[in-house]
Structures are given as structure tokens and as C-alpha cells.
Image 1 (cartoon, helix red, strand yellow):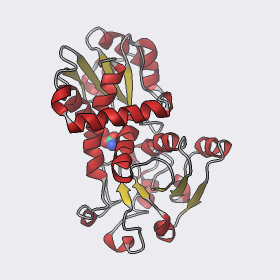
Image 2: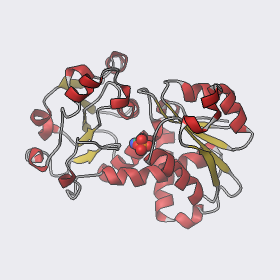
Image 3: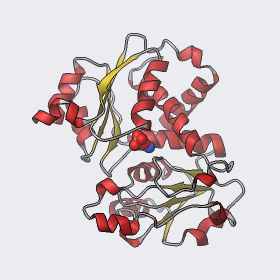
Image 4: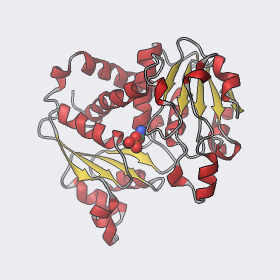
Length: 303
Ligand code: CP
């Protein structure tokens, strides 16, 4: 039995196998419509979500399975003091697979060590979000046809942005990927990730100036400043609009730039960009469902 807590638990061959399965689902959804008949997915969300929870649920329904769960901690026995370990043991009695989001880093790992069914990390605090990375990878694959030889700009809250941490980990395994880290000084990428990049001789540059590096980018991954991770509201208000992408700011961008954002957005991307063919963020939303379908099939060992 296998869980998915960190994207690096999947080899590059497995990532590419998931992308291939997702592409096959897109080409022939009927082939997959009964693959999970009789199976149940539990979505245990201790933190708000629109895309991740609903795409997991849509994924399981489209595979023929069923869904149970909760969307806030207050409606579960966590509100009465139950531990993550006991919740995982309990839900294992009712479901075949669990997707868990939790504000505490490591909570899905604790769940996986106590559950008797596979556990998928659907986002843990400011740490990791591996299934968002699966959505990002399918989007990059569909737009660029490759994961190597890319200059990838990551912009915004690189300190708390768990999607950025997981995407860097996944893309780090490919040749000639050059990361450009664009953030206010207060929200730079954590040192442990930078040290990991250095130890693998992966090139990255840090800057506060998005406009200056725009012409170099193949991918621009915008992120929201994560209000819920700040201890100080004033600091959040000071930093929240550090980067706002508008059509004018794309004047020196490549014509085949891909603009990604895990969503939700607040102000980081003007809605005027939504109709630009380079905007890929709603493709990411849909691709997330297909990759979660592929992941559920893999972890349930359904052929
Ligand atoms: N990208 C993402 O995790 O969105 P939600 O918080 O809506 O699930």
C-alpha cells in the first residue's frame, strides 16, 4: 500500500506515467468510467479549498466511485479533540483512499502512518502540495511538450507557497531547468530548499524585479501572498500587492510564455489577462482533475 505525501516519492518515470494516464483519460474518458466502481474516497479537509477538494471528488465520481468526508475541522470530531492519527484509523474503516488537507505541516504524513488505506497529501500548511504539482506538470506538458530546458519564474509568496515548494522539487529532476525566484525580501524561498538546489548544482537566481527578467521566462508561475500563514496582519497588508500582473507588464514577455497560478488568486493577475492565450491557470484547474484521477488509479492499483 502506497501513499503520496511528497512529490519526490514519485520517480520521474512514475510522474510521466501519470501524465500519460491523464492524457489517455482526456482522450477516452468512457474507458475509465467504471474503474473505481464500489470504491470510496474520503476527503478530509481541515482547511478551506475549492479546487483540490472538488477536483478530488469529481475525479472519484468520474471513475465510478463514491465520496465521503468533511470540508472543515469544526464539523468533525477534531473539534472534540480527536487526533489526526485516530481520525486516520477511523476513516480507514469507511473508505478505500483518503485525501487530506491540514494547516499543520506533516499532518498528512502522520495520517499515512496510522491509516490502513493510502493517504494523499492535499496540502499541508506552508510545506507541500504534491497534487497541485501534478496539475502543474500536466499543464506544462500540454503547453511545452517537455519538462527540461525551461526557464521558470516563480513569483510572489515563495516562503509560504507550498505549491512552489513542490513544483521546484519536481522540476529539479530535469535537465537545464533554470529557476528565477521573484519575491519581496520578506517572502523569499526557504533556505532548506535553496540549499537543496545548490547541493544538486541547479541554477537559480533571486530578484525582486519581475519586469527585468520577464523576457527570459518560458513559464511564469504567479502565487498569492498567503494571508493565513502570517502572524501579523499589517505585514500581510504591506506585502499582499507586491506583484500584480497586468497586460501592459507582458510587453516584453515571450509570445509563447505560459502563465500559471495554482489559484485562488486575489490581485496577482488582472482578469484582463484571462483572455490572453498565454494564460493557463484555468487549464491547470481542469488538469488537476485528470491527474487526480490518474493518481487514484495508481494508488488503488487499478489497471
Ligand atoms: N490550488 C488549490 O489548492 O486551490 P484550493 O485551495 O481551492 O484547493
